[in-house]
Image (cartoon, rainbow, N blue to C red; front, top):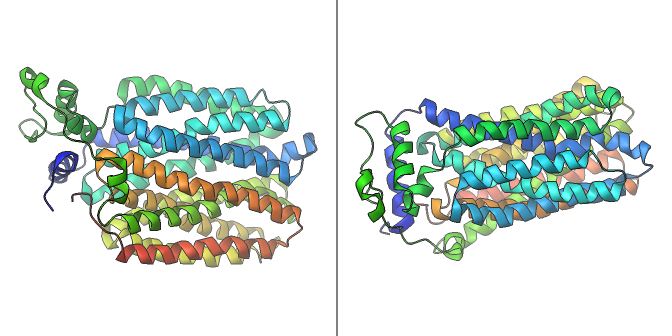
Length: 454
């Protein structure tokens, strides 16, 4: 099929990027997005760090925290649905800046919560900003990356999400006993506000967005000069680099959202991707929200329970990088199919270890490597399935569907624990979505459908 419009712009930009080595400018963009991912990961899991403390302080049970976790995830889903399309229309950079301010202020406000209902409402509002940031930092990193190393760059960048949760878990284990639970949210607000100053100066707009948009010729020319060495700036058919002709550049026709997600050959692929996101995020957010509490109920100390979450997220950070590299070499969905199968086995085994601390931490690390790391690799894989003109929208839609699973995960976990399910039975139940995700990845190998260039 002939390339037209936005797809042709994206293809030309990718071809130009693929001819050059990865440069300092691209690494800078990925690092900035990675720091945002770290703060996102810290804030997303912050409620899980304080759950054991507030459970006693406010005399509330797992069913209350199930609602609090769910409210945050509903907010994240809303942010992904609404702010993904907004970025495809107005640009990645302004939406990323908006979301950073949003979740910073939301975190600071959360420190003022005085009961579980207020906490629930504030976590919902904060979640909107967290959700809007995710698809856009993924899309921005993808659009500065050469196709040959795109999975590696995205997964390395998004390793910041579990790394932020892991560092946050460790810091929280030190801060909560001495400074109180509010300190977690104060930290989660101050740091992103400080980062915002750096982002305003150093975070550029996506060259794919600028070249397909056609209204920002001078801005695109500056970015291309930073990306490419002197004399190697590509002569794109759809973007002029002569400042005198910028006013004559016209936007290419935009692909509709429906055609981008469900056009020829894409319907089955999109639905399968959504199913994979649903099962993966259901399982991950159960673990991220309930693992410290379940471990605590198993008889281990509070600091040990929080550290189990640290190992889970450290595994996720390493797993994203490792699986991303393997995906570039062997194919993303083959790697994902194997990874999620291993995840299912590790989750079943976690339910059997009782108070064997070393084995528990090892299995938590493996579970994080294959579940959180697998989700990071899936985010990278998803960027290869859609053209740049609908990429943030497609990622936002897949993540939003996944959020339904992530909402159900903590909610179902709360119900299982409130119903006195045994710990082995709970983890067997959590392993089922991992195996279903593995099966879906196998199906996606066959039903990938139309490529982004078509």
